[in-house]
Each structure stands twice: as C-alpha cells, then as structure tokens.
Image (cartoon, rainbow, N blue to C red; front, side, top):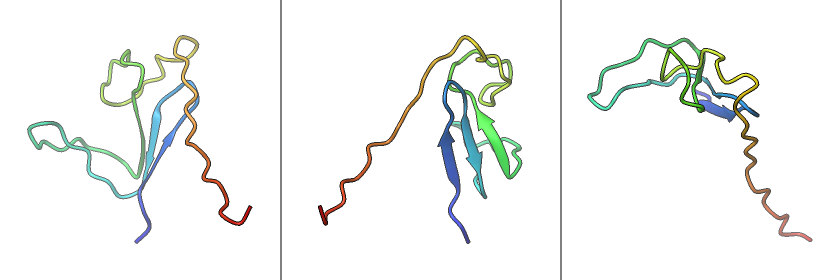
Length: 72
C-alpha cells in the first residue's frame, strides 16, 4: 500500500491524495474521494474542503527545508 500524500499548494489548498479518513473532533467521518482539497484560507463555504474562494486573495508559498547531503 502506498502512503497518502498531502501537498501544500502555492497560494491555495492542501491537496490530499490516497487512502485517508477525514474525521471531525467527535469522530464523525467526512465523505471524501481518493483526491480532495482542504481549505487553508478559512473562507470556503464548504469547510473543511476548499471551494476556490482563496483565488487572488490568499498568499502562502510554503517550502520544506532541504536536507543537506552528508557526502559534501
């Protein structure tokens, strides 16, 4: 089984791909597909899902730190 993936999109949502279960604080399951997007801007009318409301108004470009090659 391959790992699920969460991709931080530039100026947008968190793109979730793979076999994951999305639940609320009470343990209730959200209906999801194999790929879906979660809102990061807080403006979506479909929270926790992204509805594209962020376009042109939300800015965030997150990058992970690159690991240094030990052989250098």
